[in-house]
Image (cartoon, rainbow, N blue to C red):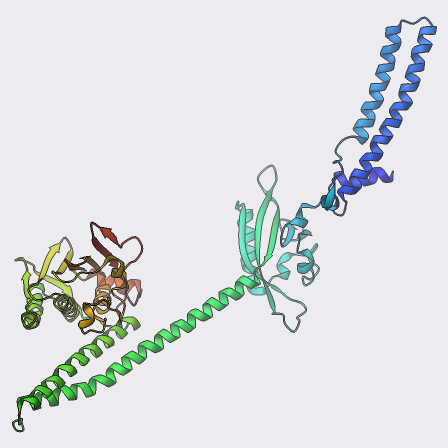
Length: 502
C-alpha cells in the first residue's frame, strides 16, 4: 500500500516527490510482476500435464495455459509497469518534479475574482517572506493603494478577452528593515486561463522583482534632470555674458568712430589712425561674435521670438549682397546673384533671413581664394522659398562634413587655420532655419567648392507648426545617419532641424 501511495504521488506530479523514489518503485514493480508471472506459469504447466493425463487434446490444454499467463501479465503490467520513468544516473536523479520550481519569480494562480489559489516558483520563499499570507486572500490586498486600480483594470482586460496583460506594481512591505524601502516594485505578467466556452476560468501570474530596474530608471531620470539644469545654467550664463559685453563694446565702437572721424581734433600721424581703425575693426568683430552667442542662447533656451512679416525677398537678398560686396572685392572674389523676376514676397522673419544669408555669404567669401567666385541664387519651388549660396573655395572633406554646425567647431586643416572665426555661423544658420520649420543642406567637394541650400516655407506655415509642436533640438547638428555620404567624390548632408518659437 505504501508503494501504491508513493507511485500515485509521482504520477500526479506532486511537489516533493523525487524521480529517484519513482525509480526504486519501478524495480519493486518489476520484481513483483515477475513473481506473479511465476505463480501463474507453474500451475499452467501442471494443467497441461493433467489435461494430457485426462485425455484432453494437447492444443486445448496449451491454449488455456497461455491465456492464463497473458491475463496475469497484462494485469501486472498495467498495474505496475506504466507511467514510471526509469532511474536516472548522476545529479539529475535528485531533481524535484515540479516545473514551477525552475521558473524565476513567484507564480500565482488566481481565480476570476483575483483571489490567490496557489503559489510556486523559484523565488517563492523570498516573496512569501513579506507577503501577508496570500493564499485564499484577494491579491489586491497586497498591492499599494495607488496601484490597485491598475491591477483591477488588468484583471478586467483578461475578462474581456485579452490573453496576456503585463503591469508594474508596488507591493506593501508589512515589516520594514533598516535597509528596506517601504514598497517592493514588481512586474506582474498575467496570462488568462479559459474554459471550453472561452470564458475566464483563472489567471496564471508570474511576479518578478524589478527593484534594480526602477533604481536604474531613477538614476537616469536624476542624471537627465542634472544635465537639463546644467544646460539651462549654461544658456543663462551665455545670455548674461553677452548682455554684459555688448554695452562696453558699443561704447568702444562709438568712441573709436569719433576718434577716426577726428571730431575733437586731428590725429597726429598715420600710425594713430591705423590703431584707431584696428580698434574699430576688432570691436566690431567681437560685437558680432557676442550677438551671435546671444542669438544662439535664445534659440537654445526657446526664447528667440520670430517676428513674422511679409516682405520682398529679392530686395532683402540684394541688400545682403551689397553689404558683403566690399569684403569680396577686397579679397579678389567675384560676388554675384541670380534672382529671377517675380520672386515675390515671403512670410518670415526678415532679420533672421538676413542673418542666414550674411553668415553663409561671409563663410563662402572667407574660404574662397582670390580669383574665385561666390554666387547667390533664389527660387520659388512650389510652396517653398529656396536660397542657395555656392562658391569655388576649398571645399570640405567627406569625413569632416559631419562636424559642421556644432558651436565653436571649425574644420581644422592647414588652410583654414589662417582664417579667423568662432565656428558659430553655421550653428546660428541651422537654428534660425529650424525656427522657420525649414531644411538645411550642404553639398561639397574637396578642392572644388561648396553649395549650401536653405529651404523655408514661403507662407510662414513652418514656423507656426514648429510653435505648435513645441520641440527644441539644439545645437542643431547635421544629420549623421542615413543622410551623409559620398557620391562621386561629393559629400552631401541634409537635415531637417526642429525648434520652437518663444
